[in-house]
Image (cartoon, rainbow, N blue to C red):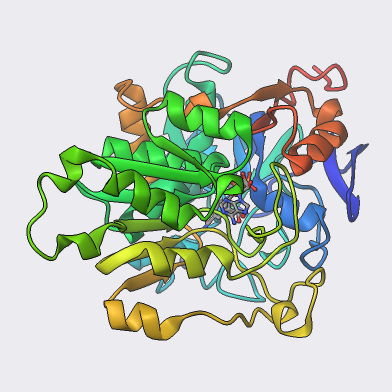
Length: 407
Ligand SMILES: NC(=O)c1ccc[n+]([C@@H]2O[C@H](COP(=O)([O-])OP(=O)(O)OC[C@H]3O[C@@H](n4cnc5c(N)ncnc54)[C@H](O)[C@@H]3O)[C@@H](O)[C@H]2O)c1
Ligand SMILES: [Zn+2]
Ligand SMILES: [Zn+2]
């Protein structure tokens, strides 16, 4: 079959690789209809991780069940399914406690597994014509409808970024009436703002610098904040301070609460240093966003970090960052009594009810998708998405419609 293979830093190719096959009775083989390129793929693409064991990329996968192993009981040939990016066994200590992002059985080298990802086990990704899914009963989420229907993009996003965005709002404890600041307007940040609105937040600010992304923030009814125009913390405080409807409801002492109660980091260790960044680039400063959220979030508030932090980071500029050691204003966070949490998303905790919101047409996360491309376009798409230029916000590869795909 054809698949997107990571050859080296900044180089992917579409190549012929071995077809996947049923290896265990609990496996299924999926014919991929859509596979997303994710901000997380760029960590590998840019050489910021160790090389994956089997470098077929793609952890955001959906398609049609082609074949099932003899022990699979809940899905069968022809079913339409979407797969969580994390692979869970369903029976270990963590999987039975909803912690499928930390499965203890799927990866011999650590408590987490995913398709097509460095340090996440020996699994091929789904930017390919077919994919092997282990523990198929546990990992397949069944979907209604037909491939290519109007919900294809919405359903595909159930594999990662929609649940990840929702997870961020859980960690940041977004509730009706909450004030929320999201740093990063990539797919994860945009959908974290969208989930905040679904959960009834009163005010949602989203910080980034890429014009097309900030335009999407405004379209959904949140407030864009461009960090190239000044310190985003001060911009958000000023927006709140200058709104008479906010200040008009304040009691004595509340002038100390001009930040927000819920802060979301949807950027991670590749945060750009806002002192030097321009619209699309600039030097990195790993602790930039965490530092600003600790400053911005009001006393007793909550910080949820779903942006990735990596160690070892072979591409880091200095030794401590290479080991994932950053300086943070922890005393300030402690003094404010902030809760801070983060990590990989346990997709299975959320994907069923988020699917049902999509089926009811009460959530349409697919609005973030900017490009649908054949598999053959992957090398160019990686290049452009990596540069965050030409409106490349979210790319979905369609292996079955590719001119290079076989019938
Ligand atoms: N926790 C999980 O399970 C999980 C799942 C999916 C993705 N992620 C991670 O979430 C992060 C975001 O993913 P994405 O696909 O949206 O990526 P992305 O790279 O498309 O988006 C990141 C955005 O952050 C912006 N940014 C950079 N520096 C900034 C700063 N200082 N302040 C504000 N914004 C800044 C960039 O301009 C970019 O638009 C990545 O680290 C990704 O790996 C985590
Ligand atoms: Zn992803
Ligand atoms: Zn498990």
